[in-house]
Length: 554
Image (cartoon, rainbow, N blue to C red; front, side, top):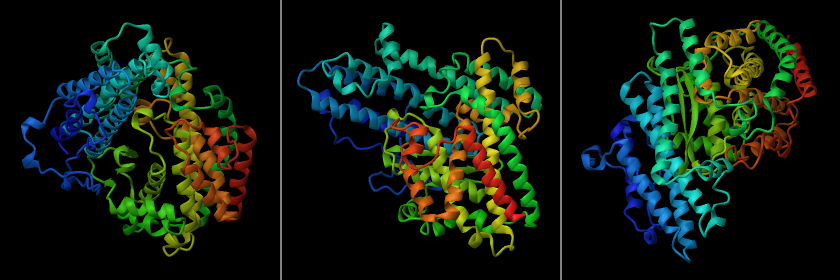
């Protein structure tokens, strides 16, 4: 999908609204029309989406970022004008929904642009298209925030109570803002963040730099990105109910328990005698078809998700050397759906990577949170994906058993080893981030690199500082891999003892929204029958259970 098409898609929605008067903004306005490029495999299969041929897309329907955002600003201006009208509550409610739907549409364009970008991340056109949709989304989100703030100051203030976070009220309430000022502030904020991310990808793709030189330059980026963070604020955006201090406190327990368990499991793996090239070509080339075949043996709902994934072609696997080595699932909120991208994964990894991402995909159907209202809780999200990996271990005898007698046990042990790896590597990365934030303002790039190396000195996880894209895309995210893996391990042993109980617990956690903000991590675990995982006793217990399982295999 070209740059012109992404921007035209966004503009189609905003122009439809901006041409209406305040009293004409009603729910007959159609959803965004996505111009599908069948050669790029964006066949979502929704009946309400209109296909428009390339030949019919003339220059009049295209626009630059600035022109598109001018249209968005006009929509917001109309919305604010409506707030002055008396006895207009029903129309205000409809207009609120229009703004939320508009941002959902832009979010969806950004998702599809990201797939293009990571498929060919050194291509200038795909990079520009991705950055364009990010730019439009970021500024639009801020303009809508300003519109809703204006709503809190109007006669309809009660309609905006749940739409205006405290930080938005403080931002616009403490300063003199009008719509033009709000846009200028939004543009400035976006470019500050975009500059750091662009620098990161430029450094990463610069073959003239050594790994150590890349690390130093990336350390400079981290210092800039985290300059406004404090230890107290660092986890706030993830709706977490634990602190960085708790993570630091548990790091030694992780080192003493999880890492030793990891080595015990690896020893058991070696004794299985399994061949390492265990996946056949058909499994690595058609992982989602394999998922579809087994999903119906887990539950009707999971089978339904697998069928929709295949039928609507909501995934892309890119093995081209031009692709970025990454796997992710991102939302298509106008369709209450999601899209999976897998790039540059080895044959040995691709099936379980697909299973992991399918866990995110499945959970997306239970979550209809508007993009504007998303409060990311990646701890919950990663239980939904790690948990799906665990559920699929019950099929390893069927999937791998015919390849070699020991392969199914090999894969179960490997799954446990991977969970251990998630835990200790994410704890170390999380500890690094938190200690870095604690020293922001008094640390040099050289000291950042030394801090990173120091934390991984005894158990180096094989990555340079420049290799971990999460640090630059989503600072603070990585620790969620550890907390989620700790919780998902409960499903492994539940599955051995009571399959129905394991599936029931997973289905409950899959239906907990990771976006709505209704649940924190510990609340979600308790609601779904999981134990609290962030304490020494639990970590010791789950480590012992894994060691005993590995000993039985030995």
